[in-house]
Amino acid sequence: MTQKVLTSLLLLLLCGSVAAEPTHKPTTTRRAAAEKQNVKSTPKEPETPAKEPPAKEPPANELFGAVPSPAPLAARAIGSYARGCLAGAVALPINGPDWQVMRLSRNRNWGHPRLLDFLERFAADARNLDGWPGLLVGDMSQPRGGPMITGHSSHQIGLDVDIWLTPMPDRILTPQERENMMAVSMLKDPFTVDPDKWTPLHTKLIKRAASYPEVDRIFVHPAIKKVLCDQAGNDRAWLGKVRPWWNHYYHFHVRVTCPPGASDCEPQKPLSGDDGCGQELSNWFAMLKKTAIAGVGQPATGIPRKSSITMSKLPPECGTVLTAGGFEPPIPVNADNLPQPVLKALASKETGPPPPKLDAAARRALLMSSSEMPVPERNPRR
Ligand SMILES: [Zn+2]
Image (cartoon, rainbow, N blue to C red; front, side, top):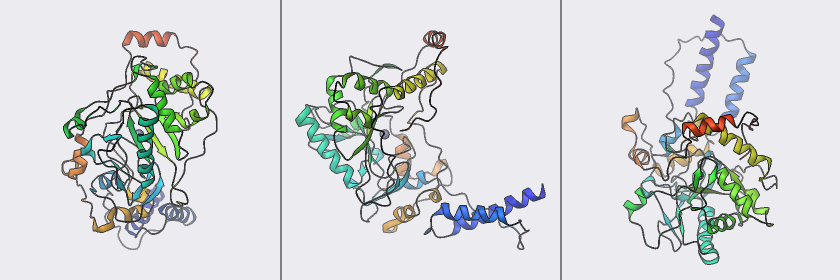
C-alpha cells in the first residue's frame, strides 16, 4: 500500500517536472523515459516535502480556439490531421467566384495554401465542367489549426474542409443568412438516401472532388457511399477515396494529402485500392442498424468537446505556433470566462439537421429482423 502511494507520488513529481520543462524535445520520449526509470528504480521517499500538484493544464482546444489570427510563420502543417496545428495559414476569402463561406462567426475558414489552391480549382471545375452552381464552404481550420471546442476531431492541420451538399444560391448571402441557413439532409431514414434530394449532380460533385491527385480521402455518410457505389458504373477507381463516416449526410469532408516534402506532416495510411463497396460497406450498415436499434443518434457534432488533449499531447512545435507573433492565449479558469472567440464558436448554430432516428415501432421491427446481424468491425479504417 505504502509502496503504491510512493510510486504515485514519484510519478506526480516526474510529470510535474515534465510539464514545467520547455518543449523542445518530443514529450512522448520524455514520458517513456520517465516511466522506464520508474520501473527500474525502487521509489524512494523524496527528501524535500512534496510540493502542491502542478496547476492543471488547460485543454488545447480552449487555447487554439482563442487565437484570432494565423501564426506569422512559413506555412506548415504540423502533426497529424487529428493531433496537430497549422503555421502560416491563409484565409479563404468569404466570397469567391464559385463559393461562399458559411458560419463566419466561427472563424474557421483558414487552411494551408495547398488546401486553398485545391478548393479554388475544385469550385471552378465543379461549376464549369459539371454545372454545380458553387460551393457553400463549412469548417476548415482555426487560424492556427489545433483541436476545436466544437465539431471535429480532425481539421487540425489546415488540410481538411467540410463542403455542404446544398448548392450555393445565386446571390451573395448576408452574414446573418450564413449564420442561420441550414444545410439539407440527404437522408430519408438512417439507412437510405432520399431520392428527392440526391441528384446526379451530387454524384458528379463527389466524383469531381475525388479526381484530384492531392485529394487523399473524402468522408460521406454510409448511405451516400452506397448510392455512389450503385451509380458509379464501370469507372470505379475514385470510389476508394470516398470513405463512409458518421454525420456526413448534409456535407462532405475533403482531406488533401500532406504537402510534398513536408516531413512534419503525418500522412494517413495509403488506401487499399479496393472500391469499398463490398464487405466494408456491409459492416457500416450493420453499425447503422445497431445504432438505430439502440435509438441513439450518431456521435453528435455540435456538442462542446470535453477534451483532455493538452499542449503536451500535441507536437512540441505547436507551442511555438500558438504563441508566435507574441500572442498570449488567455487561460480560462472556468466555463464562465472562456475567451470571446471560443464563446462565439460555442454559440454558433449547428449547420444541419440532427441525424434521422427511427420511432419505437420501427426499432422493434428492425430488432425482430436482425437476429442474424453480423458483428460489425468496431473500428473501421478511415
Ligand atoms: Zn469534417
